[in-house]
Image (cartoon, rainbow, N blue to C red; front, side, top):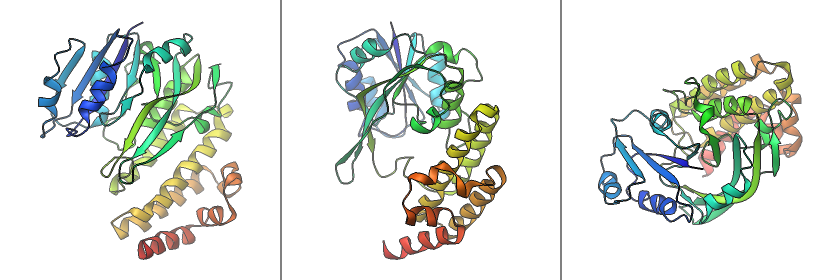
Amino acid sequence: MKFSIIVPTYNREKYIAKCIDSVLNQTYNNFELIIVDDGSTDNTAKIVRSYKDPRIMYIKNQNHGISYSRNFGIDKASGEYIIFLDSDDYLHESAFDNILVDFNDSDILIFDYTEIFEKNNTKKENKFPSFKNYNLKEHPELINIINLGPCNKVYKRSLFKDESNRFPLGIKYEDFPLLIKLFKEAKNISSCGKQLTNVVVHEGSETLTVDEKVFDIFKGFDMVKETLNDDIYKEELSKLLVRKITTYTVSQRTQKDKKLINKFIDEAFKYLKEYVPDYKDNKYYEDRSFIKRTIEKNKTLTKLYCKLYRLFK
């Protein structure tokens, strides 16, 4: 069983060595480490080239973005199984050994991960329910109980045989449209309930950056709606739309451009009203506190919340 670990990188000289070492130091050694450099201008190339391990494949391209780099890695991969790892993240010891025990011939295996917040040196464990051999048709709730990022999962490379199964280019939120498509096509999805990777969150991380590309979230949802166009997904898709869009409206509190705050919130509520007309009664809000759901359901209160946050931060 051979793993292909795909690592896109861009100007990560501070982190890349720890990422590489976490792969090379695994006790299971049947793998290839594909590092796709998206045009770094720092010492990333020098650091990577200092490793003489023949299992490392290093390619430096011009700057095209993370989706292009991941897709490039997919096309270069020769292993039966693919793992995506960001260049500022790192694997736990014996991660591959644990995967071998739990994979069970699944098309996708999900594992838990730890977020490490560099600014204040705190940690957050992200845990998911354990299950074996699920599929999305029988368990559409998976799109709301499993994170829709690519890096805490193992995939059969055969899922990418269809060339349309690639990260979409030119949009910021490239992860979740493809992940949902892969979930739908996978015959067997399992979750092992083990913490196998560390995700470093630092200033400048894509997950923390709020800018004008936040509007790409709507393009992503348009792709998801096309994928989940069967009635069996309707309830969970509505919950996903409400949950994610609500998250992004509230996150506008950190947006630097004041005009974009109101513009995005207006567009978000317009999108919700169009595709989830009864969104205020959505099950997502059942687990929210009274104050949170009152704010999140109301456009005016959401704008006020973002404004007050900026004033008192």
